[in-house]
Image (cartoon, rainbow, N blue to C red; front, side, top):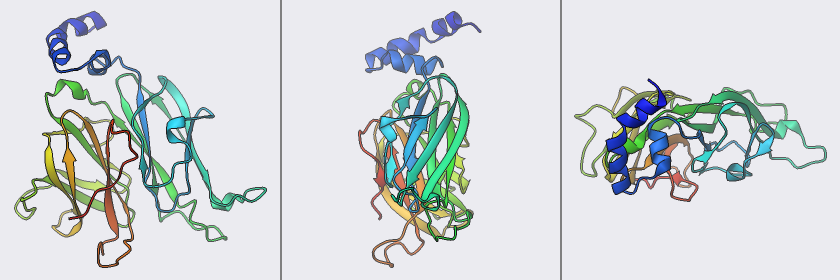
Length: 275
């Protein structure tokens, strides 16, 4: 199907979008012609402040960002590129590489797609002789082809397991008075460093409202973290679990928490309040 045919097919939805406040960027996203979008997340308690560079040029949206940080989407050029994430704990002269994190991933950014690069703590990475944990991290890439502006009032939701200490989790997104006991998870069996829906698949839709967001050990009702989050209309929401040590050991004995990022809020995301 050529581009003109696609434009004719979406003529009615475009009119509806205009009435609801949608614009030309919404339309381009819907038919897969928009520039690629990228966001960056530092959700590792091991990582130093990190900077993301594309083909050697630092991105102002993700420069020297400490955890917990989840950026808004920003535009990148289509095509293949190196995305380098680095940070230094020790500022000696010369800097000690054992106190630095430095990794690169290469991927082809495609029009109509949105991407997320996350830095997560990875306990499988061996400690150097210095004992520095700065290198005990890994990069995760998520591809989201969602055309979210053609789905009415719903928001799109995706979750990533960034917790090495919870190798597989289930995630529930339920009403404030609901219980998880008699229902299946909304996003089941999320392995460490994976997302649900899987990378390359469209995110799920959720109506606006106040929700409990509950992470459990996969296949069980053993609650690891329970928090509260408000999902507005027609937005993009990312949930990420991460290793977490509370100031009070009895607050979150599981050792994980859930961070959230609401696209377009202008903030850096953060841990959702526990319930």
